[in-house]
Length: 88
Image 1: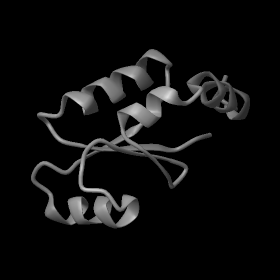
Image 2 (image 1 turned 90 degrees about the horizontal axis):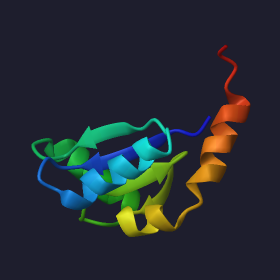
Image 3 (image 1 turned 90 degrees about the vertical axis):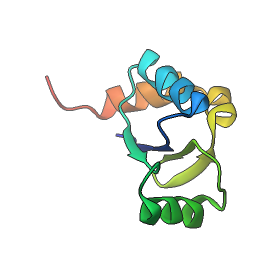
Image 4 (image 1 turned 180 degrees about the vertical axis):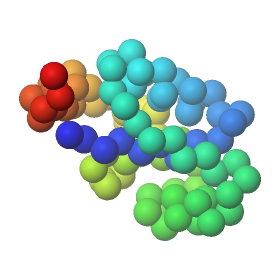
């Protein structure tokens, strides 16, 4: 099962779009709000090499922001998650 993380802020429209896109595909994600958490913001910058939000990681691999997410084939990620899902 893929682990998806999104570093975001409260006022970020691209963050909202990224979360909506994942939700529309039925993909779960962990949201990390860096609005007021300096340590998590620094963590995001170290992991991604970028200062902007959203920063999205799939299985600890930085894929970038909303633009990069929207170019991925999310159906493949969803199918992989379904195939590995052992819950009935």
